[in-house]
Length: 265
Ligand code: KIV
Image (tube, rainbow, N blue to C red; front, side, top):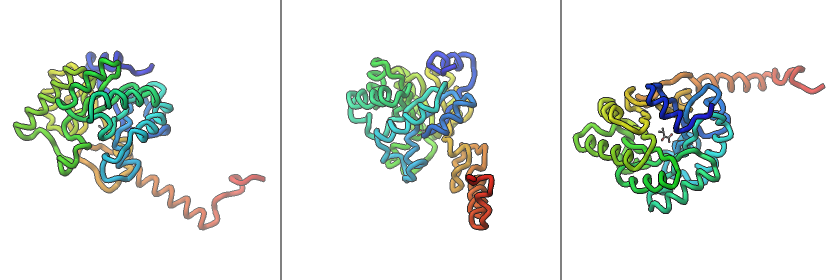
């Protein structure tokens, strides 16, 4: 059955957890969809994961539209959320309305995700009033990497705690139906979640949330170089793929591929 806002809020009410995966293409979206993952986020993490950039800042609106179209084709039931890239919504609510409308109309995403709290509240309000479901994203926000300096936990100081509470409230009041908390101490995430009306999704925010999100390539172990504390690997993907590639190379070099059966008579 297709996932929508009603079924997502029903899950929250019933205390059932929501699963979300960041995906960027048809194939990974289809696999997630077939096992019943609730939401697919076309994350701007595609900057690092797909493009090999050091951060998410160079991702363009056209790239998000392209990857969202691919994911939507693979998502029969999953709820597809498109991540709005850096500077595609911060300039003004009008700019945000125009760009988010493209993501909904051209790429057929069901919702958009925006990073930020109080500073984007008016934009969130205008988007929701225009009929575009909005996901907020606070805590560590990768588009502000040049302010943070490096990925880190946000909300350890009293000042950051206070700001997170205010940002959360501002997003809820503006109409964000879902809020992602990234790299937030679990006690603070729990407090925000326990008083929430919006759906709360965590990544590095502990287990007291309505659900969790991880990047497809992280949870399947496609990256060997670095594993953030909050990532659980469900597969040693890179190791398995390399083994297969080595075997393929070896078979070619030994003249064992292709065999008679793999050749046309
Ligand atoms: O870009 C992304 O994939 C994200 C999630 C990890 C929350 O923002």
